[in-house]
Image (cartoon, rainbow over all chains, first blue to last red; front, side, top):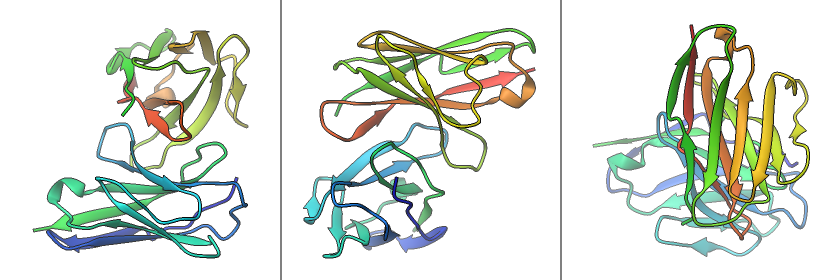
Length: 106
Length: 114
């Protein structure tokens, strides 16, 4: 499985966009990029996934670079409830790295 | 989205006893489920892949005789921690793919061994 690299932590002001980067330089052609988040003491929550095209859903947008070696998760208007650890994962089997601890501040 | 449940949500047991944790897919069928363990302030660690009707596949370093996995139906996988010890105290989480390629996770089970 391709390994992913994310910053350890990030802060974001409430109401602003949160941009969370992820490097996956060893990703192979058929591997998707998935994003999950985990709020303290809960199971991870699926956010979004993509292969090569940019994706958007009600929670977030996913921007994947053309060479697919990195991606960015965008939370357009962060709220306090978006404070969590965000994980960027590449299939085949779901292996979690350390993730990014996002803190949204009022 | 799809729903995965776990039971119990938390359990306290004495050292040397066994504990069974259930993972259920409530509105979909899952031929494969995954079991994770998470220690405080650490990321999730994949323990094993549960396969319906066949043996589970364990990750390197995970004792299959200690962590017994049974996937008896398309909606239920169980993890039994045998002869539990305090170092087995952790947050255990299961997940399952729901038709698409994304995984859905259960709420987790917090195990405390005294």
